[in-house]
Amino acid sequence: MKIDLTKQFFNLNGSELLENGQPLRLKDIAISCLLSMKEGENISAEEKVSRFSVAKSMYETQTPEAFEIKIEDLSLIKKLIGADYYPIIVGQAYQFLEG
Image 1 (spheres, rainbow, N blue to C red):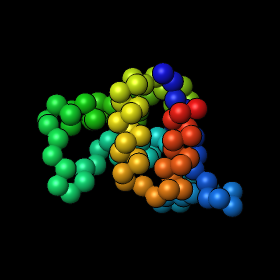
Image 2: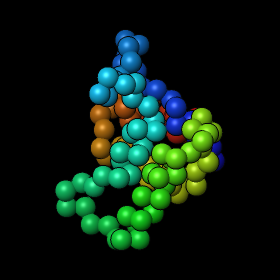
Image 3: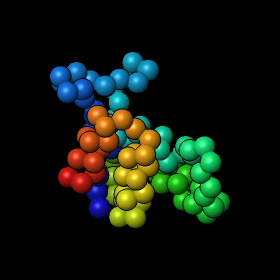
Image 4: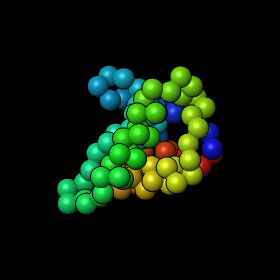
């Protein structure tokens, strides 16, 4: 499946959501989720390597507007975003990932 990592997040009033003065994009959110862990989260080394691999490929992609992703990785990213972010981000991220 292909997703567009360049999708940008906006407030309900249409203003850009920014992080460190830069537009917040799906690529930023997905990589952040993949590389972080919640307190008390216990995942295997294999899972950590898998998350790192997906994050690295997102970071290095030459075609962020048509990033090829496996369905299971997409499901993981949705789960992680859903657990880590506010509704304004989760709602838009799910639209980007399911569209």
